[in-house]
Image 1 (cartoon, helix red, strand yellow):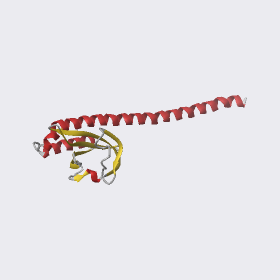
Image 2 (cartoon, one colour):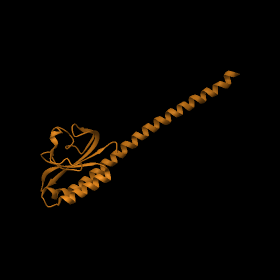
Image 3 (cartoon, one colour):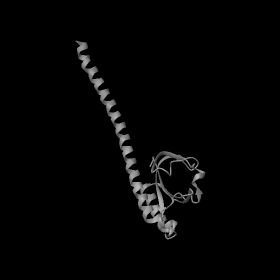
Image 4 (cartoon, helix red, strand yellow):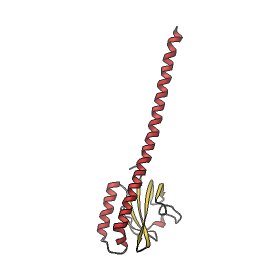
Amino acid sequence: MKSIRRFPFKLLICYAITMIVLFFGWSVAGTRFFEERLIDLDKDSLYHELRLISDNYVKGYFSNSLVDDKLSKTFSLLHAHYNARVFVIRKDRLIISDTAATVNTLLNKFLPDESELLSQTYTENATIPGLIDEPFFAVSYPIYDDMSHRGHLLIIKYYSD
């Protein structure tokens, strides 16, 4: 009679352990899914912002018809809203604007020519050794003025933010 009474208790324990393991497994998988989805939403939003900035502001920067103050305010708002680092990079890879104030630094000093950071729209889990060692994702948008490629807008957002 003792063995009959213990069987349901053991079954109940096994059931409870299985449910706990399943719950934590779903929690981890769900968290990762939502984290990836939020990063994708950030990328799309940042791409849209860069496109608007390129089309409306940065072209004038290269033709000297835009006051630097207006572009700086735009980048400051973008930096504050997304907590991201914004660069304007000339075609020759010279950083001409950076919300972290690393101005007039050749990007190729840190980034080899074969890097996909500027050539791809989205880059994930990237670093720039010597400049940015913390993993980030980046969104890049080309700048064209008078049918000529002038450079890139680059925005970097850290995963920890």
